[in-house]
Image (cartoon, rainbow, N blue to C red; front, side, top):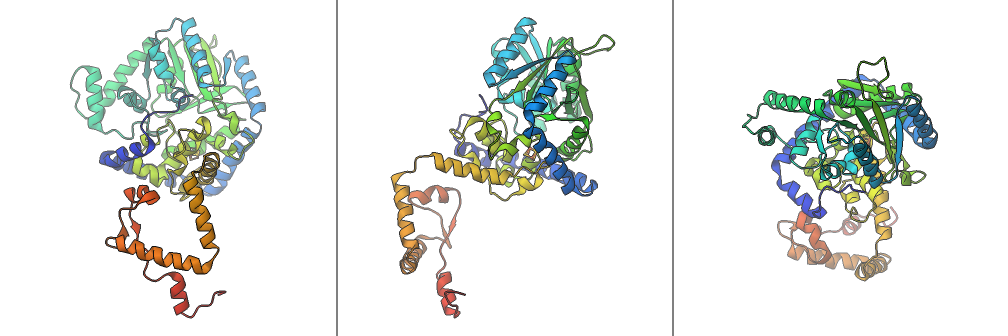
Length: 473
Ligand code: SF4
């Protein structure tokens, strides 16, 4: 399994992000734009809460009956002439895809956006095997040239400005390109058009699979998914096992929620539904269609407190409202999935070991839960993960002793007050301008990143007594 995009420790990644003023400015601007668009689109729908409940019910039902719908979907894809492969692990995904590539003697692959392929690090593996891989989504193409991971699930290059893109494209073009949007997009379009024509294989993700028909539904704004699935002779779709909608009528609701929550659009420029490879009467399309259905840790969430995480439709709305993402951007999370959904999903897919800081990368304000179109209780899951993290780690003797001591003092009101008074006095002696700026011992990591207000001269208990309050009031 490979969700890691950075080998730096979490605090270092956050420090780096906090020093990057451009990144924070770009993230804020885009977050505000996307959030505003989503709010307008939601209010146009009337009772948005009722729509959310409907979408949640569809996703809950689908995940509760996932085995039935996977079975139905597989049968339908095969009846339409496609080949279905099940991949339990990231290595299985790589093995399936490389086997197809070898069998086809393919040398070049064109891809449209797929978070699952990022999850299993497919590009790197294919490139190591000597296959040319070109990302056809503009944002993905930019981060591919920059040799970076996407920093947002909808807008992969949110952290890059025009000048940086011009620099990347100039290197690729072998000539200086000005930082003008129309020139840069024209360069990318011309470059990709050639790659589409030359590619042996097209690889896509899959926004939804429709169980009743075996159709793969792809949503894009650039038309690149459509070219990826029609020009190359072989199409491989890599989809998470949870990405199903039972019927077209369910898909209708889910698409309504996805596009509005992601970008504030009523519908994206292209919604493509593919059922099987090219038939005789079709004018275009691939000769072979392979669908790789990926588990990679997802089934371990079924039947647990975390099952609702599988309801996610990857709209990015939780990322667009998150105050922590606003400050640190996507790369600081370290995994492929950033923001609140990443802070929940990555430790669930990979385990807490190595990702134990992610559940703490949240203010627990609940904005993510409120924004989620399928009502996933993200901040509750973050709390649950913190609980799991504490339960599974070995507590140091010093921590155990400290809490034991606190328990003893807290049980004795007289002792508690005496302790609070002397502790408060001591803290005020070292405070500067009303704040503790340099802590010691376990307080130090806290004051390294923020100031701690000095305790008040008068405690609440003292004030209460002076005001004539009684203990039981
Ligand atoms: S958790 Fe909800 S808001 Fe976040 S990406 Fe998934 S569906 Fe969208």
